[in-house]
Every structure is written in C-alpha cells, then in structure tokens.
Image (cartoon, rainbow, N blue to C red; front, side, top):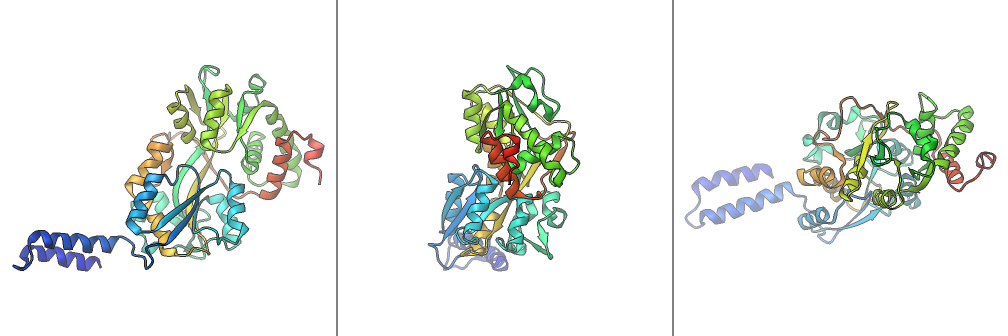
Length: 367
C-alpha cells in the first residue's frame, strides 16, 4: 500500500489535464491515510480497555475512535489484585487489551490469559528507546520466541515528604518506621508491594521471594509499619486528597513521580527522595487477551499510544516516564529495584488484609 502512495506522489508531477493538481493531492492524501491507518471491517467495533488512571485520557481515546471508527470502553483499576480479578474472572473474555507490569505479567502468561503480539505489524515500536525496543532483553516479556507485551510506561516507588514537617530529604526507607511520624505516614494498600518493602527494610537480598522462615519477621515489620500509618490509599488522586487534607508527613509513593506532579499541581510543597536501599520500580506494558474480539484493533490501540502525543501526555499530565524519551525526573545515581514475581501473591494479599484490619501477629499468621 505504501508503494501505491509513492506512485501517486510521482504522478503529481505530471497530472492529467482531466484532473487538477489539488484533486491529485487529495487523492494522494487519501491513499496515504489508508496505508498507515488500520482498516476494520466493522466500523462499529468496540475496544474494551482495562487500565490504570492516566493511561487512557478522554481526548486521546477520542482521537483513536475518530481514526478507526471504533468505540473505546475504558474501565479503570487501582490495584494489581483488582486487575487479576477482572481478567481471570472470565478467562480474559471481558476485555480486549489491558496494562500490567512485567512482574505481574508472568502469572497471566502462565494461565493463558494473554496472547502473543504481532510486533511486525506495528509501526511505532521503532520510536522506542533501545532498552525498551529490545524486547528479548526485558525479563518476562518474551516467551518461546514470542512477544507477549509492549512496554509503555514506568516509575519508581520513592518517598514523598512534606517539606514543612520534614526539612531534609529522607535517605532510607527506614524513615517509614520512624516513631516521630506515627500516624503521619500514608501507605499504599497492596499486599505484594508491602511485603517486598518490609523484606527490603529487613535487608533481604531477594525481597520478592520470602522463605518459610521469613514470614514471621515480615509480618511483624508490617504490623509495626501499620502503627505509623495515617491511612491507606489505592489511586493516585486519592493519595493527593488524603495527603493534603489529613496532614501527612510522609508517603510511600506507589506511583512515584506521578503523585509528585499531582501534589504540586494541588499546591502542596513536597519533596521526593529515592532511598539508598533503592526504590522499587515497575514497568507497565500493554497486552492482549485471548478473548479480544479484534486483535488487529487491540494492536492498533497499543501502536497508537506510542505516538508522540500520547507518549508526551504521560510525562506532561501524569508525571510518568514513557518509553520513547528519557525521563526528565530520573537521576543517573538513583538505584531502581525492578519488580519481580513474588513467591505467593494470594498469601501476601491475605496476610496484608489481616494486618490492615488491625489483627495481632498470631491471628495474621493463623491458618
């Protein structure tokens, strides 16, 4: 099709007397659009997107709908657990495409809840930075020689602090347990990350894989952390409201720079620190379910989001990094600890829920 577009361009030099140059130009533009935009048999198709806040803004969705003639239905989630429940509930048939981090991705692949992506049919992968373009170099993305995910955005989970209450930037995650901030720490409500944080604070070299002998100390550490908790949040916007209205001094930033940006826009004077132990970091990718009604439409959605405008929106609106340009908030000295699959998601979630509810250690660890 692109060859045909080139032929049309050449014809402009010697246009027919029966057709004006402007008519030829319009014809050329039409052919070019057909060649680079996906064509779908049913213009009334619906793309069902399951994603996180800020990944599918209304104006970006509208552009995609205008291009393809399809309708996009966006459903938002706020935790990895909620994402798993929605996708696994009906074997992936309720959605066509969703965003998931590389650590969580592994269980979706293991359960057959995502399918390979035809990367050779996507135009914008070449625009990505080399470290994201080389999919084989990203752990967990390629299986059996097939790509199951396309990197989209990433962030580190640093420490956000109120400059009025904490004058110097924290240097260690141990500050979350500091008794000076009892009732002043805002925490993310998620079991998998919380147990990793506890293991990291205890000095575990492999905080994603707890041994049988590690559970007791980790639970005790999280109960101690709960004593410092002001409350728990799930969504970025929720964390901003709680931080601002309830006078938090410190926050474990699950969404990293995205939350910093939101707080600054809300007029809150905050600082952001990467602890010396390293900040946990996630890489979110787009994947396609086996129940996708049109894989071509799902791939077109992923490809579209790698274009300059959607990619820039991640940075400008959300404070996140994209995979097509260097992050303005990253420091070369910062140490990032990329998320890995954990030993038992279900157990971490169950024990975390008991901890948050206020149970004592004996009850938390009870069968």
